[in-house]
Length: 342
Image (cartoon, rainbow, N blue to C red; front, side, top):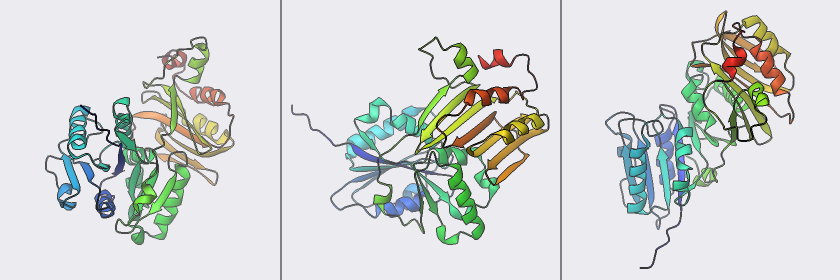
């Protein structure tokens, strides 16, 4: 029997926080379907009753599948794998749009869909995150961890409700662009979801990220060439893209740091473009948001871990020296080395 070769399906992930305008954007994109093509949509509702599916075109040429009752990014991959496989095998779409729930983590979904199993079937396109431009001034909204995680997964950010943005929103957008130069390659503004498909129909490019033990631990284990990447705390990571480098550290939330010593260490750094951090200190949980013009810090809410990121364009930075200075800020010093090796 002759095997029929089916071309890879161009696949777009359209993510965004609750109410950002994902479905509105998707509606406008679907209107651009050529008559001789079949397009498919896989939607994810966190609740048990799906609504968004009813808002999309129901005529010929569109195949829409909705998964309810959880987040396809975070829960068992099996329902998503089955639904996606059936959608592709039954409809053979030319193009596929996946819209995760607003409570989803698109980075996890991207990790799933770029696994070897899907590489011969899916032609992953640039990952898109939709952000409500009219709410950029609302820090209670923009500083949520899930909101920030979705931005980190974006290759393209679409600013919705651009016609309703205030001067404060414009300032906040510029600050946002300064914070995510490594992750986001394009920022696009959209009014009522209007956007040309060609603007987002770009190849997917993941950010190179290397997660490893703390640098002082790496130095002790330098003779072990098979040292694996890790994800448990504490760890250090480096991301590189578009000439920028992000160096980050995450420590257990139980570690406590001396606030004034830590502030001195951060203020002493040179050559950075952005420093963002949250630490459990002897003055309570504190957040730091530094740019070359302002060094801002304030009390923060209890976090799931201590974390810090520095963005720089410098090619060679003494990161181990900085890490050592950070660890010296920890109040409970006697087991820093032992804990770092865990």
